[in-house]
Length: 56
Image 1 (spheres, rainbow, N blue to C red):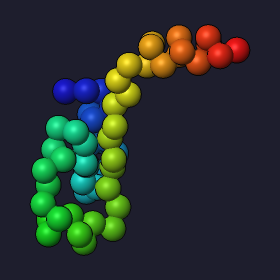
Image 2 (cartoon, rainbow, N blue to C red):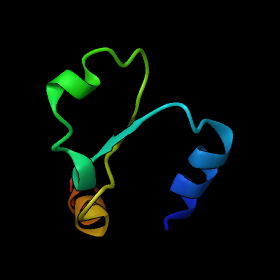
Image 3 (cartoon, rainbow, N blue to C red):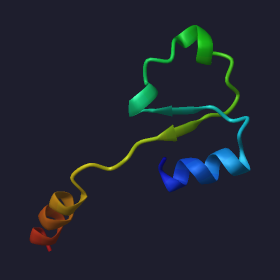
């Protein structure tokens, strides 16, 4: 389990999480969520930085 998920579960277990792995949570299940964690892991970070550095 990812360390950020472990930390979140320990501090705020009552707040649901929405991520790429569980994005199929039905709207009827999440429509009444007052708060939720939106986890979006960054893919391609190194390539993004390379492109940004070439613009400088």
